[in-house]
Image (cartoon, rainbow, N blue to C red):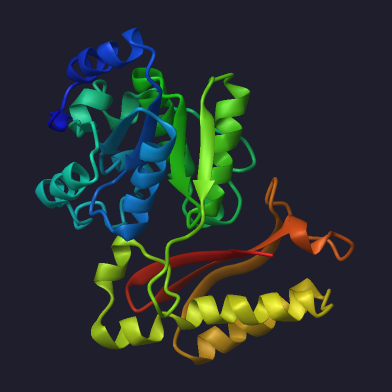
Length: 284
């Protein structure tokens, strides 16, 4: 059966009605499009664990601040759909902004996850995670999937959506898959396309810095503040502009303590290289 592409809520509901009537499991992969191999690995996981796979493609204005890259964010719907069709995706939902936010950006109901929305990336990008959770809550209510699959590159986002789903009693399994990387270790991201050729050669330094921190922690280093400061200084000397590098507890992203078990920790980093904001993490 050919892949369906729907742009309206009504069209998506009609397409999904048959799946539910016949008791088929539905996997949802929310994306902003400009798909790469990391996204496609999420689709492949959904195909293995559900009878039907739906991919949403929507560049969400609520999660961009006025000075961010909403207008220039790559929009490649035709190419994305071709890739998804090859993987056997059942349905692509690619709505307009008006379809999801009929009352406009400034008058729409929003969903906020306290505390987790304001840490780390949330501190640097106020309101960003309210936009993420508001969109995903809409998608969950519309599609009512059995499972939703996210990449762990956006680690805070994954944890926040996991928390939202639990608190709002949504019967949806939230899956987080490991970060998909290029051969040199750079985490795959749609924003990697913004890097100049010279910056692309430099970009893997971020992941190498996290690996070095990991080695030191596993070797017994417990002065986390000194360790993160050292890493920030090294990246700055190499031409980066770090927003933060933190060692946090995985479950709630609160600051790590010296007596925490290593297995419970994650290193999280955001740094600018030129005009490109790169995000990465490494679970310990």
